[in-house]
Amino acid sequence: MKRIFQVSFCLMFMVWAGVANAQTQPIEPDAGSDPGTNKGEGNYKPSSGWADGFVVGGNLGATFGNSTYIEVSPVFGYHITEMLIGGVGFTYQYYKENYNVINFADYSASVIGPRVFLQHELIFNFFAHAEFEHAWAKFEYEDPTLGAYQLEADALFVGLGYNSMMSENARFQIMLLYDLLNGVESIYYNPFVVRVGYLLDL
Image (cartoon, rainbow, N blue to C red; front, side, top):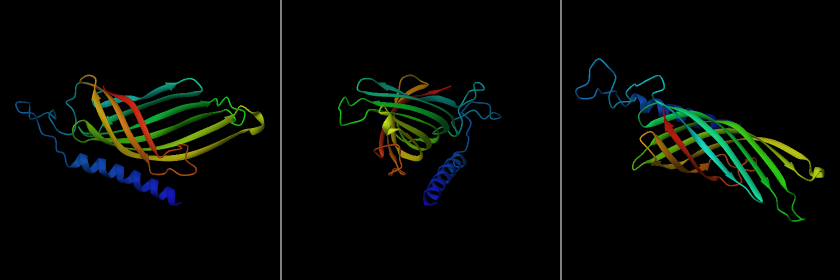
């Protein structure tokens, strides 16, 4: 019950912060523009089509060898304001560990689940990031006598990131996040997570 309260409070705070930020940044028309339009430097970018304001991106990663790791985590969001992005995503992660040692049992793990996030630009291409994730994980040992087990767990990540602009509409992102809900039931061994990915303005 305590964890449910923490998650609910954090999500309510994130939504409230986004709404409050949107309400405190009035739309102002550009100089010389038609005052009857909403084009300007305010909350939303000038409209250029149905996809304006939307962003897509995510994280892709893979390593192979004794330790195999594959991640596919797309995200889809929208510019709530010029500096605030909110969105949803989905993550799939696969791990396989080959110890090649008799005393350790090789295993594999699959993680899948949805996520919601808020991202707010700060200064010098830095941004604040908050994200809630619910994931289901399945662990299987190659030794059939050890069987398999499943679990589901929540994660609430907060932290900072940096945007490296690849073009006017595309950015490479690196983030250092901390899981506020990390514990014995977490699927992450360490509360600190480093994430790299990209984000593209449509």
